[in-house]
Length: 442
Image 1: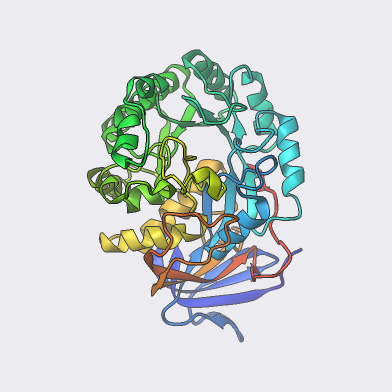
Image 2: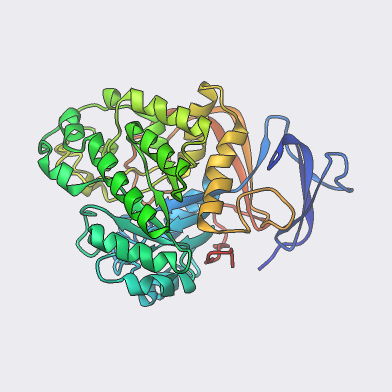
């Protein structure tokens, strides 16, 4: 299904070369021209003075969990939440669903389940686990944008971690086809030697997953990437002390990129109440000094992108009844609010909407090879979001399947008022309009 022709114009449009007044011309779901504000034809849709036209966001780190754990989240609820938040493309993680996406057959299962129920476009990561290195090139050929691995226990038995030999085997297979491996970088040995968490103390939980666990695992990933020449990416960086080694690796030519997440940019360990297990994630939210260093690294270009790492579960698994961080599932639910959360923090630090668009649309599209996404430009999909950057609101009802989130009640600045996917308005109650897409955007 495709849309007809229309023009939307605004006094502020976020374009690849900067923000300015412009008119965006759309035909059959694709941007056909970007002209001056006054070159919009006879009957353009004109945005209000307090609105900015953004490219639809691309969230390359979403745990949908369907099939197998659909009670945690599902394609219908996750993609409705994405659309409400101005996110027009998500990339689904290969674990927490059953089966995990570690073979072409499992990818077919995931796509069959998602078909017909997605409100935004959806792409898929494959998974690298012990013994499946020969499956990785076929996964990419079947449409996966890359593969994900863990360097310690993932928390679910069907997605075991890679040791150093397994990591090198996976990277060797991927290097032959210039495939991308993304890695959860915490070191199991370091965590085994750390104090054990227990009870409601957030300080005790933080001590159980120290920053050196991230640094050690990132060092292992850098060494393997240097040896094999493969492309690698560090997911959800929380420990700012790892930044010097990442800078050094890039300087010597290692092909490594890195992301962080809204919760690491928003919260700090000092403010997490004891027993507040909605804040539990792995790696953990660290001290305010790390938060501010992550913001500085984004501003300097040392961190490439910001993604949600939306990883919800049922309220029961969060163990809010006892507030025990050792027992609670680790994961933050926040897909729908990522744009206003990041914008609220960015504007407080003097950063611009152009920065946010780069981190949350252009860079994830580039990472995943989704060439039709990530910018308001001729030839791109007409994925657009109308954003009111000065409007204030408080987080309440969300489209996520389960309501537990540390953002509940938080005051934010910036509201998504309207979203288009390939030129089609996404409205509550409409039939799902999303497509299942592959690397390259098809």
